[in-house]
Length: 237
Image: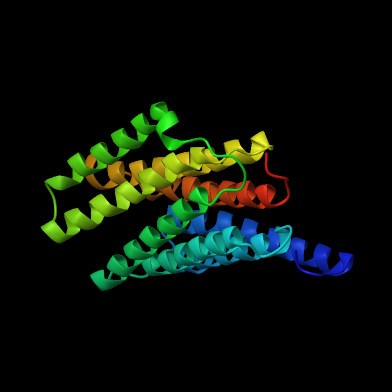
């Protein structure tokens, strides 16, 4: 944890709380009302706030888990910026998608590096079912669209996200709140992508309805941050 005095810490927490709420609320409001400038500016502020909160609240040494978590958050931040840019070039969308893919690679690595005893993945077959269903649903829905390169990228990303959800059950923590919040975070990640699927291929959504993508994504990242920061404070089970 950074060596900050009490007054400085309180000031930092206060500033980050305001920044977190502003980026959370105003980016969703901007998207829902069609204000692309407001949406883009405040969406780009959200993940840096999460990164800073993680820095201030992490307990103990800057471990490998800390580095993996912050790398995941950083790639999410870059992806957020690129996805929010005007769609004048597909290259932004392409690179942004690969940034989100890298994010999940670091999350999977983080889960498999969890402290203490592990729940063997092959002993939790029930949780493999929604993961498998998610991957199959996404790829069946997308396979009839786009070229082969798009299909392969989509398959790789959906598989990585499904795997990061599944491996979230690998950790065993003393704090049930930390354990459950991590699982809920990745569940909301899946829900966010399902809403993207519905918006693109199934339903006609207004900006207000589609803003639920941002809502679930923001809550997911917040819960992931809370889960791992809380894990840094506890003794392994």
